[in-house]
Length: 318
Image 1 (spheres, helix red, strand yellow):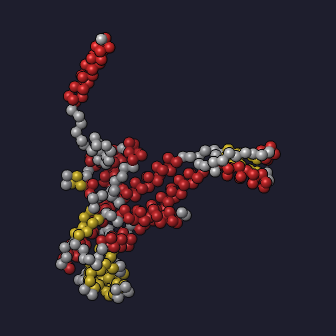
Image 2 (cartoon, one colour):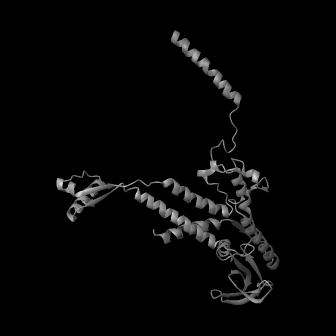
Image 3 (cartoon, helix red, strand yellow):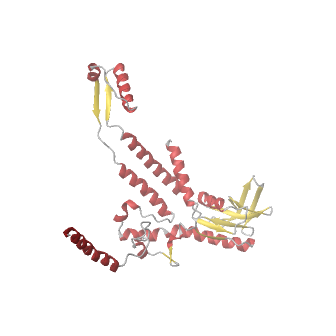
């Protein structure tokens, strides 16, 4: 894969992850939740309206009059697929924003897909370069061909034999310094993923450095991941309320389970919650909270060991 293909693959994955943030109930059959989210995440805003007795979500351009802030009071839709060339207003359409200022995720997706694709390319280059422990130079084409044949036999699992001393004398082997720092590249790659997930509200305290995360950093994480995604949710809830009021529907929107981790006993997690080392634990059953063996049972088992040893000694004496 070339860089462009890697970049697209990474961006598609990040976008697909962000697409799972919200779930809707009660939307009309003609309005799919995935289409609504895709348009909001890519474009930052859309309108929900009714056209020819069908509900639609449309991209639009500003129309009508502007207020002192430069905001338009109408929405121009030009959609040839449903033959809609119409100006809508707040009386027959609801504007749905991704955030308060209609910011999309396109910029963020582009940035992190670029960073991640570069780290994947670096990792791949490091992997390929790890195969090169030395360089071979040949004095002439015949020697070069003989050396290539010898190496091919070795790679094919055959015994390679050099036929003449002049061949050895015309070859030069130059060892290369080893540069196989895979771990730092892997950590950088994981950091980029973790940083993106954190920005869209999925706290991922990067496992490889989890033990080194300070209390200050966890407090920063707790207070920094909420505002952006909470603002996204607020704008969707506000739009849904207007849609229900204007069109007599019963649409609801909420976070999906992956984002609901923030709800603990019916409340948002606090900075103090983030200091709990087991908050994001996905480890063994003991970490999950299974009861430990009673201490008395352990003492009984230990107390029984000398008796077993004593019986063994008696048998030996007999």
